[in-house]
Image: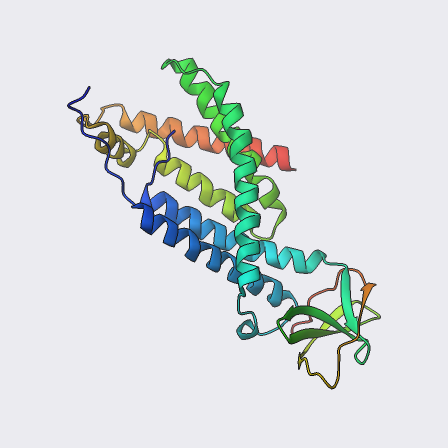
Length: 173
Length: 97
């Protein structure tokens, strides 16, 4: 396995750190705009301060870290073998974890739109899509071969997603 | 599922975080019940204090609805602020004309 080149990193450390800083600033600003919007205070007055940015970064990272700590613990109990049952269990666990993260969001205005966007992202990165197969090829250096059963896999994926939506709607209602 | 450092996924997460923060800010404002009130303006609640600038929004105490007016005050040494915290209850957004 030594002849396999390492997977190329898309983002360097410097860009990642700069991106986190910019994201914290944007999150703090977005929070203040939302807060000011309710009181009809102009957005021009909602300039983010250092305190707001640090607070937003601390709050966001605290929530996400707590979630990923729990998700990692749940994920450690899922089976690792590459069988149909193992894959199905892993899929159910992923959907469950996503719902666990997103259920509080549905209480917000347009929360269901966010939930839909998350599922679109999940679909794009799930193994049923050709894009994801090419992505896997880039990481593992294995040749990608389009499968004849792709359409069937696509239908299965859409059916699975629709079922998940119904399940989520029932749980929330 | 290994997320790695896929640029598309990270940008998507950043956008989701910004949208989520905006919605959280709006929700926080809708649910906020305790407000600071200045002594000279009892029908104005303090929205935030930014350094030496205080931004407050007017409301109607009867129907607990915001009027849409706002005041920006700057702290001066000659006239100090006098604030008190009050439980007013959630304030409704100003009526759209």
